[in-house]
Length: 344
Image (cartoon, rainbow, N blue to C red; front, side, top):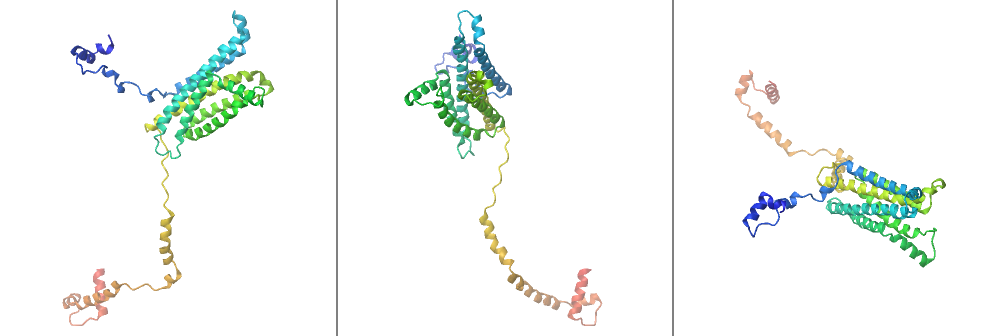
């Protein structure tokens, strides 16, 4: 019997033989299972372990290739070519294929989240679709070396090759398409400095592998050119995978609002408003306007009659209070007394 049938909820529905009872228990609900974003590593240890695993695998494959002859002498029935072409190349190819498949899945997840960003007016999130397609194609090519068949067909059809092996037939298209995707990817991940640093390290590994394939290496390191050409692509794929993991984590945290960003700059006032205000300022600052006499306000004209009315209303009682009983005061004296009363 299953665990859900033996549980309390499952046993109740099973014993009652209810035809409308659900076929699965409550633990099978979606909220009880991890989502896709929960599978993205959140700790630095996971990224560091991925990088060390990829570098260790590439180093082991390079060591097997370099020490193939001594190892073959100690193993009966095993030749050095079996170790180089079978074991070393197989480990490198399958490890690269797995790394590229994981990059394609992370690119798909990142694309599904970044496409909902409201301030991405340039549509830079579309680069993740190209990253996913390119990673999937490189994963297939790592197991089935289609680039070698393409080189042979191109050299046989044209009868021309720049190098002895004709690698420029597949390096040139790959450099054009990959360079375009790489530049757009740099513009997309520039917000995360750690992602940018890891991605540039992976690009440096691919550049070194390209130089080794083309033979642009010093004479002292010519013996290691073949080993570098086979091991460095795996190291570059490992760093690219680590960069995809770090940026996917960054996007998930940014969606959750856990990433602090600089506040947006306030937009400046339009210049049209300033131009509308200028005519009023110019009109008041002209010499003619400054020399012109200020217009007399109608309030000032009304003030004189009010004062006269107040003077006419001045009663004899006020005069008696001020000590002027039998003498008539002039208007100037009345105004002077009024000022004194106000000051008191």
